[in-house]
Image (cartoon, rainbow over all chains, first blue to last red; front, side, top):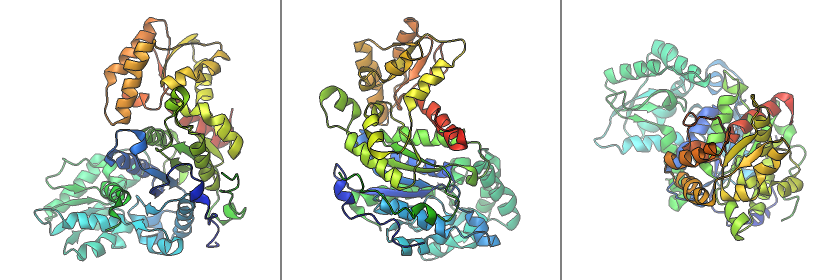
Length: 251
Length: 251
């Protein structure tokens, strides 16, 4: 794949009829319902009373992107070329920052950012910062996520820098509760009981917060069902994107 | 604006790592919540049990597009250049059909289609076909829509070809119920009472179906509140897009 395929003439932005301002790129479709959920959260979290006060957004939603967990664990097709292609479409469309509402995809993003050159609002980094800022401080958190995200140690690595230990479900709960629930939600079904059960096991092991660490999980696990806070990285990402667009930049 | 700004090298599609297949372009942001609602409906209406069976979608959501009703009624800024720009971003990103989940914007689409050359799934045409196919046949329908859509006679023209008469609210109900409710929904509030009242006035005048003819209206008017069917053009558009993508083409 040529690195210049999606380069557009530099006159592009000048041809925009208004003031182009920040344009948020969303690399999505993993899965599509999680992308729609993120987009709705982004809109709800934007302080606006008219259409014109909302953010300009370009979304590339490619649900045919090969399964991230399968690529990490079973030698399945590497989704990186799909992610690079999508990021280039977003860059060509004027995105000046990219958000990826899929936890597992974050395992592949360093290679994507390197090839496309548009900054990323990193969902897992932002979620770790959010957890580190909780008061009273939380020293142990539980993770509900795909087996790919768990094994790639995405949260573990970021949380370690904040002095927070990560608890993950045992292998039976991971397979038969968490992954079963994620597949069920992706198929348009709902089985809240499975996720709540897996979360309670983590609380029993002293988790003082639960990360809903797959974009499908907030769709199937209501906060308020548990005695500890549930952190939704999709919501954290939406708020970080808005802070970026309003001039706070990435931090 | 040059007509070739967004032309990409013809190698683009060949660089896609998978089988490119149909890509749905969504020209949105008018308003953003209506676009998120359309995208969610498109996903829910797609028969799929895994991510990979869903449609590839590219969404350009530009809420800064000038107000369509104001352009039609008060000599406000013409939104056409914004719509052309967005349609070109979608075409450059590989969209082979464009859907516009905004009724009032349809008044400006003939000029857009002419300049961009990507076919449109026309929401108002599809809704008129849907109404014409209702059994028992409906001869009179009521319209809840922006004053811009009402005055531009968008539905009236399409429905006339199907032998269906259109009833619109009187000017007081249009201003104080319908437009007030639309602005309230765009501001993130909700006032279901206003829309239900306007709809009941149309039913009292013998409307046998109600068109929820502004993409904000289905968000504020629940079906089941009324003794006649409420047709949601956003839902009709989602189903028409899926039929197109599955090879039925535009009809």
